[in-house]
Structures are given as structure tokens and as C-alpha cells.
Amino acid sequence: QVQLVESGGGLVQAGGSLRLSCAASGRTVSSYGMGWFRRAPGKEREFVAGISWSGETTSYEESVKGRYTISRDNTQNTMYLQMNSLKPEDTAVYYCAARLSRWYDQRAREYNYWGQGTQVTVSS
Image 1: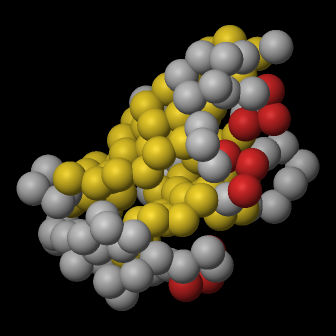
Image 2: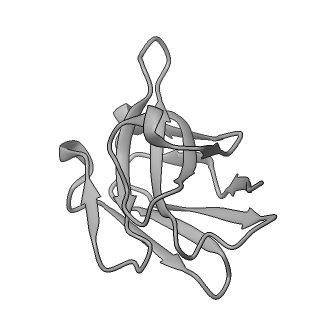
């Protein structure tokens, strides 16, 4: 089993930055595709960013392109999401996820393991 724990969320003003971390335990995730999702109040969970097992391939939801950067450190069994130029509409609970494949997927149902989420609130 894989346990995922997110950290780094908080309250930030518009235009600010946050860096989320997703620490995995129980098993190495170095061969797993991983992703970040978010759920805003009253909305469905949506894909934010994905990263392949090696970190060489990434993908972003259109609204975060150029502002967010996904990365991973397989030696630390950890994935990151650097979020810059934050907007109030980025406010959501952010979840990390891992799937039993080397590649990420934009569909939440394709992931096998989930963290508990971390709240990100961007004030205007």
C-alpha cells in the first residue's frame, strides 16, 4: 500500500505563491505516474497537473499553464507543485494521487492512491 500526505497549503493573497508537497510512504512511487487534482467549493474534482514516473513528461490544465510547475524527487519519494501568480479562482482543496502505471492520466478514476488533501485559499 502507498500512503500519500500533502502539505504546504494555506492562505495567500492574490499574486502570491505556494509550494505543495506530496510525500509517499509504504512503497516507493518512483515507477508510478502521479498527479495533482483540486476540488473547489461547489465544483467537481478536476485535474491540475500530471507527471510521468521519470519526471520527463508533464501536463497541465489550461488555466494553470505558465503559473504552476509539477516536479518530483524520486530519491525522496516526493512530488511537488509550485504555484505562482495565484488567483482567487485557484482556491480549492488540492489532492495528490498516484497510479500503477509509469504515466499520468487526467482522469481521477485512473488513480489508485490518494492523499487526504490540503486547503489552498487565495484572497483577493
